[in-house]
Image 1 (spheres, rainbow, N blue to C red):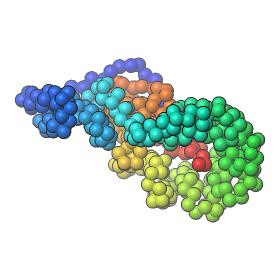
Image 2: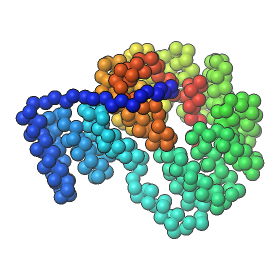
Image 3: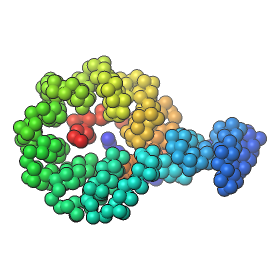
Image 4: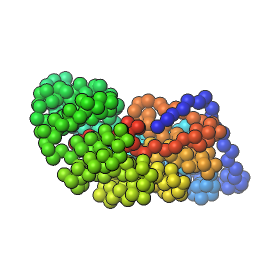
Length: 404
């Protein structure tokens, strides 16, 4: 995805309401704030809701109610209220921070973390305890933290290929492909019959554009395990990069002959159809993926992109909404693309809100700030010049094809 840098300029918004309604709503907020201090949370929720009924444009009421929901671990409700507060007042910094905190908490309940931390505390010399925490963090897409745990495990057991493998996958997810290559090479040197090791080494090589070496490792994968269907998916990606679309489809078909439920193969086949502008077939394939796995977010995203590219904008909005509200609230590109649609509709406040959500999630996931845009006209200019990219498209180098 292309990012732009712009000057830091806060956007101002004017909120208007009738004086009586404003004052009534503020009175309810004051009461609610007092109730929160007394830990009378249900009563506070009622007062915040009354404030909203009196005046739907009181961002402080949504923020306060969201804070209570967050404290009660009602994370979806909290996220909804913080986003509403931001929609009303895009420069509400505290609401942005709380929304980011909510996104982080949506990942998993605290007791799941505590269980793993306790295992480490009870047996700090057991490397598998660190691996278990690392895998858990990895599933939450906290790759930086996961890598730290894998490294600790490897310090305790430096020649364990299982730990090396997980660390390699962590490097892959962080885009550190040379480091991943180093790890997987050590894995297959220790255990030459480890098919997952050869396969993931192929992935790390492919990400670096080392096509001949990739093919060599894919063939080794198939020598060890002729039924390793994902290897054919990567062969298909190589053909796709060469724009040999029919040959790519043939490779994906081979993958599905071995494993009819290989959703990555079906998903990649949908990408080829979309690139060939066979949009109806691409939509059918992505729908088939989602039928098998409703949480296959990339397929849902690409459905939105296809509708977006073909100017069926209401349908595109439906799919971006579905992703952010139901499938994966941390899927940053859906916020980015929805911001484009809001900009096209002239709703720059919501475009700004979505872009800020995109920014916060990106920083939470990668530890890095994306380009930050605060000026309405610059948001509009950026989004009007931008075309959404299919997730998994070869030129995007964002294909997620790892095993286990």
